[in-house]
Length: 171
Image (cartoon, rainbow, N blue to C red; front, side, top):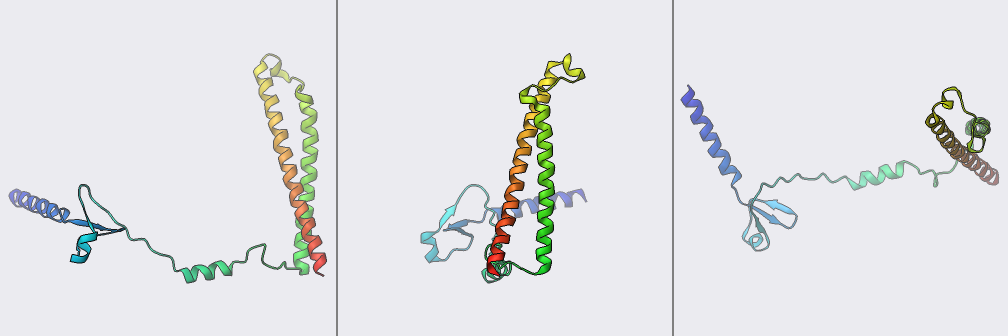
């Protein structure tokens, strides 16, 4: 039984070596192991190393165009001026205004705490100056982050104002 198994392994090993030793030709970007006489002049024999070629699947361009045209872009599609859409826009604007007020209130609080770079020291910071410096740096970063938030909220509110002015002009 062992002798048969060993013989089978040796046979499979020899067979796999003969498969791996087929000649492979490169014809432009294509690889093949069968070459006609015409192709033999332009194709080059690939030597050394194994070549693995995976065929790429080309997307169907007609369906890609249909999909692209089916999804309207925000700049080319007309704005829906229904009462429902105006209500949603108004709600969104009110939410943005409330967020802006919260951010401005937080900004005032942070600026008060920062005190021009010299906030008051808290309990453990009197003995550990590094904690104080860390808190000062954190306050400064929070102020910068909050300023960016405020600028973003104002930009969004500006877009609502421009969109409403454009909708009023279309009426």
